[in-house]
Length: 133
Image (tube, rainbow, N blue to C red):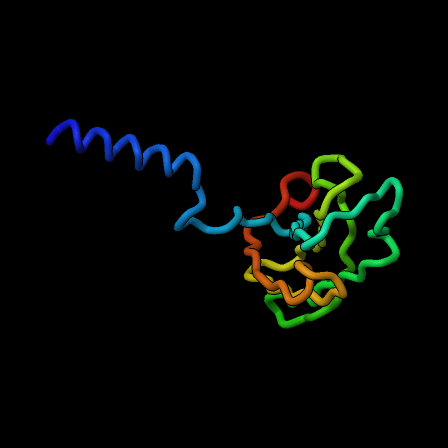
């Protein structure tokens, strides 16, 4: 019985290491006056070097962002290659200046599969350290 308990404990510990965000909040809160970054992946890959296909001219990506106060605006997204400095990939990003504390919401429009119709939210709390703190 003790051996079975030990094995189950090891399995659960291993799963917790592999899936640390299961049941947790999706991301840490963004400090007020910092930049929230939304990372999206398109259904197909793009080559930023050769432009085949060209992510800079063939992909339209915008996010409709709503601040906690209800203020809404549109933010353009951009191609970020593989998300780790590589020029080939399917990573697109949207950056939002978070100037209000509370829950922000966003939804995307795009002409590219995997980017169209995405939505989510992020929390802003505290204040960015330094000049703003």
